[in-house]
Image (cartoon, rainbow, N blue to C red; front, side):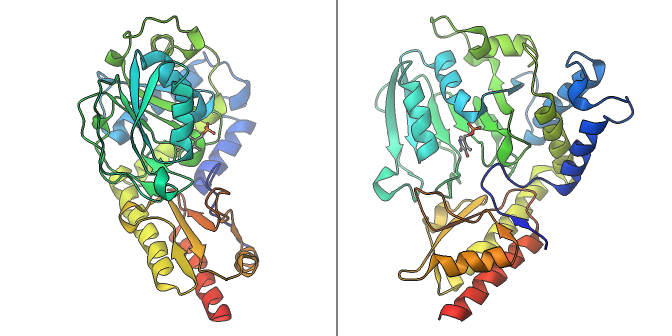
Length: 355
Ligand SMILES: *Cc1c(COP(=O)(O)O)cnc(C)c1O
């Protein structure tokens, strides 16, 4: 039976990418060696790293004279502390839109004062706060552009006068926004770019050098920039697979076309959630994520039956995060319209069965 992977992360990648990256483990193109047994200093791998870095900038419409691209390790979770250790001098501002923002806040508190300039905690993070009040001077503002667990997403990025840092783990490369609004953004690869094991960091170098503390080399952005992401052995498999995904995005016409598809797919799902008498959306409509659609059954309905129907139809990874419950359909770039249609048909079938 064909499987439809709605997992929130690690998550679906294009089939072509999986096939080609699998082949590279056996033998990389024609060099006669496996990708994972060659030196990261070889000309083959250096060209992979260089192409990945320049494709990131090309797709995001950024210039290499302003922005540096790093492929680091430790996940987005490592960036929660790396951003703070490198950039938090006295005080940082955070918009708290859920668990991941909260984790970033907790790490930053180790290095300085943190103020929450806005939060949606009052409604279990089912919306994006629109009013942001910054009363004190802050070194930077940190936000999470897409809230993977709750299914909310910033449609408008706050326009403020301090450096802007964003966790884009679950919506990087999903939409054609102005990425030059940000001074630094990062994303764990495993949501929309590649396998777990590397984290993309895009950074304006002029942000650095403003804190006095000593920074251990592995945590120092400056060290990684100077060594062009090769300070130590980079995660070669994760970087190569990410490169294949970046090429795939490019071949589809870049972020403009990708965004059109994502808008169409998410609209299909949300239309069904709103039409179907058995389900109710979790978030405020205007803040709905185009990557993670969260929804619940109406009161008194039985999860088991819907889960069973999903399973019988090859739908995998649809269970909501434990802090929200219900269901979550993650519909990253590689998710096909066909799989969305399968899910919608299952939702329709469920409605007929129970009502
Ligand atoms: C998944 C996720 C993370 C955590 O990423 P790791 O790479 O596992 O550390 C952080 N932020 C967001 C928004 C996520 O979706």
